[in-house]
Image (cartoon, rainbow, N blue to C red; front, side, top):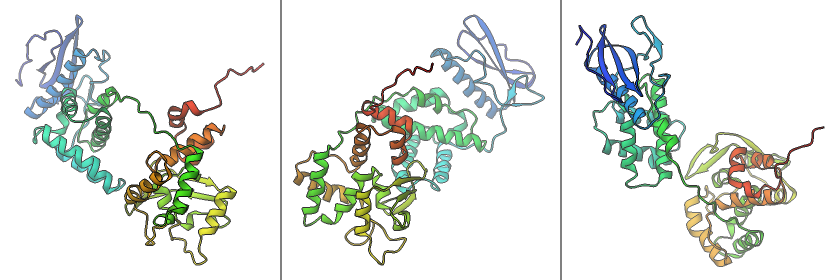
Length: 387
């Protein structure tokens, strides 16, 4: 094939891989128009596989009416003396799909909790290994291959779970591009296509329910130790891990504000969910609570809300034992402890607090706050009279 072009005629929607002046070129027809794309790659067996993967991508886009007539989506990226268009970046030695995702997972262990690695990354790795040929190169995964993987996942899981997995795969292939392991990312487009049905948020605790819960904790002989922790959750809207990890050094000496920048879950201390720091102002009632529970010999690194044994609260045990029992005793419909945050936000907005202020206190993205709590925002949009 090195000497002359492949003269096979391209039928409608079929992309032909051919040798043109010792370089690989793609050629096809769409709606009567002829297209060609020079890849600038030598005609070798491995490069043929890469060209065929690119051809499959174009064919899939034609079939599903998402073909990019500008060809920008399919062009490689660096100009060389051999290519009439832009050539792909040189890549590192090819990695299989499993090898790439394993390397990406190892990279993420620096910033992601072991629990998340186990529950998400390792699960995705197992699904990849069970679906794809173990020898298949990550570089040659086409959109058609990716769509097949999604169809495989749809047999056993919800769209919401698939969306999460696609986010990880998209991030993995983007990371692979920075390492020059992959060139084309088929997961990005699929991630945008998977639609998740909106989920109604749990019903917030009303004021009477909140009072009943706090009172029930106070009166419970087994779990009254957690009363201050529960009251703090309802009073600030912090995430449970943020309250569990709170130390006295995070609270101003004059009890004017609280610094929230860390979270503690199952013994692992890390940054907040959004990796952003925020400051919460302390009102008179909250100040009184914190002053009351701070011991004279309290050290900066001591936990503000330790367990009865003086250790960090185990959120799982607290939920299944103390929280569930006390809510039943109080006659309150069960909702998870995290609902204290949803309740705080709901009550703040219902009382007319500025959504931007609420977002600042709770560490929410303002756009997300409007999206999830739009019905509770009292300030309706109006057209101002400027003159």
